[in-house]
Image (cartoon, rainbow, N blue to C red; front, side):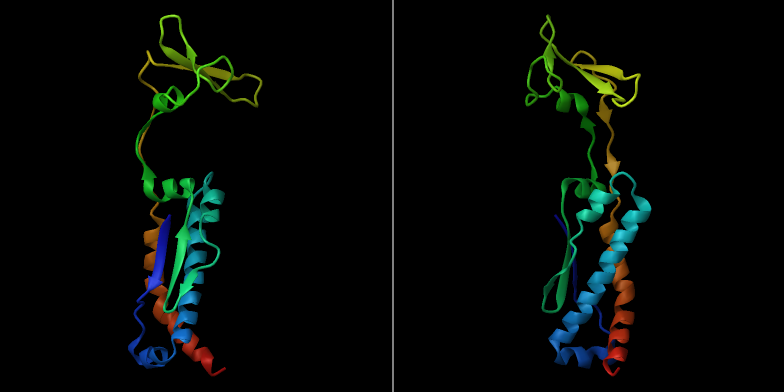
Length: 179
């Protein structure tokens, strides 16, 4: 779980006295900033992601969790976490032939060769007529390393965005009080 906490925003000096008197009003403005930040976050994902976009945006909390004077937006889920923070290198042999993979004759299981090593046949392009197969084996170490991926770090960009819109949002809120 990754949080974007919106608190201790720099209130313009000329507006500070208004918000010091009414924590409810301050919370209203912070909620508005949080909702704008959420929309910016979704827009970042929409414009930068492809296959993982839907799952990533579903991982962003719909509404901010409100506390007096602060708001928190949360990102949850395995795929959103991988997109945000990246992922270390993975040896797919360990995953596909690991101790937790059952031995058997059915698809999805590893098989044991006569000499005792394990192998598994992976089918690619299932929906096409010319399906391709590839065998992964304990005897063939290369070709099954999935490299490290860097994270998108959208959370940092959202935090920067919050700082850039705060003063204007406070001013707009105060301007609309008399209307």
